[in-house]
Length: 481
Image (tube, rainbow, N blue to C red; front, top):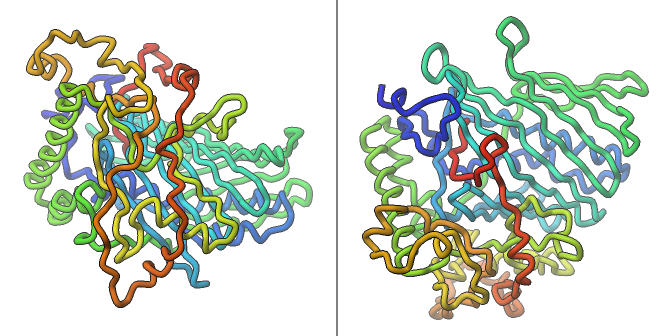
C-alpha cells in the first residue's frame, strides 16, 4: 500500500520508491548493450553495396534487439551520476566490438554511450533520456534521445529513435510489458526513412507486441512494408514485387551478451562493482537486503551532490563532452545527442583506432584505467558558466540550510568543458601475458579533448528540454521496462 499512497495520474516516477522485486539485476548502462547484442545482423551491413538493401539491413539490426528482456515486468537500476560501464564482444572473425558508457546527467537522466567495431567500419554514438510518468494502472517511460549509427566506409549516418515503454497492471490485474508508439530510422545521406509503429493492445481488440510500418525513399514513396511481432517473427514486403520475406526471427535468435572485466579489476563507480550487492540480493530474492544496499548507494549520491553544492564544485562527465552542434559545429545536425565521447577515434587503420579506444577507458581484462574518477572544482574550470545553484542559492546561507532546502541541486551539469588532464598515474607493471599492453605500445599522446575550449555562445545556446504540458525543465525520471 505504500507505493499506492505515492501515486497519482501524471506523477513523476523518479519521486516514487519502487519495490526491489521489480528490479532487473543490471544497470541501464549495461542494458543498452541489448542494442548491439546481435552482431550477425550488425557486422555485415558495411559489406552491402546497394544503399536501399543496406538501409533494410539497418532496420533488421534495429529490430533484432527488442526481444532481449528478463521475464515479467522489470526495470533496470538507475545509474548514479558519473557511473561508468565498459564492455566488449569477441566476434567469430577474431575482431572485437568495444562499448563505453557513462551517466552524464542526473536531472534529467541521460545515459551516453559509444560503440565501435573498427575492422567493420561501424560506430554508434547515443544518449538515452527516459522520461517516466504514472498513468493510472500503467507506468509510461517516454524514451527520448537518439543514437547515430555511422558507417565509416560509406560516410552514411542513421539517426535512430526508440519506442516508448509501458508497464501495464502495476496496481491490479496482470502486469504486462509493452512497447508502443512510433520510432524512426533516418539516413540524411540517402534520404531513406523507416517509420516503425510498435502497437499496443487495445481494450477490445488487437494483440500484444505487434509492429508495422514502412520504409520510404527521399520522395516519400513507400518501398517496403513491415509487419509481425517484435518478440517473434518479423516480415518485410517489397511493395514493387509484392514479395513478402522473413526479416528476423526473434523466437529462435540467440543474442550475444558483452564481456566485462572481472570485478576485482573494476573501480568503485563502474556499474557491476557499484551494484554488485544489490544485484546479488535481487537474485537471491533478498528484497530487504536489496533495498538497504540500494538506499545506501542513493544516499551516497545525495551526500556527494550536497558536498558539491556546499563546496561550489561543478560536476563534469569523465568520458563524454558536450556536442558541438549548430551551424559550423563539428557535430552539426547531431544536437539531440547532447553528449559524445570525449576523444578522437580517427586512426587511419583499425589497429590505430583500437589503440585510441583503449586510451579512453579500461575495457579489456588486465588493462589499467587511464584516469581516476574525480570531481573538478569550479575554480579549475576553463569557463565559469552559471548553474541553477549560483542563480538561486544565496551565498550567505549556511551549508546546513542549503542541504535542507535543496539537497540534490548539485547534480546539475555545468555547460563548460571538462578540466585539463588529471595527475599522471603511477608506473604500470607489465604482465607476462599482456596482449592488450602490446596494443598500447607506440601510442601517440592522448587525443582526449579535455583542453578544448567551448565557445561561450555554445554554452548559452545549449538545448534545454521542457515538459510539453507544464513547460517546466525536465527533472530526473526512471526508465521502466
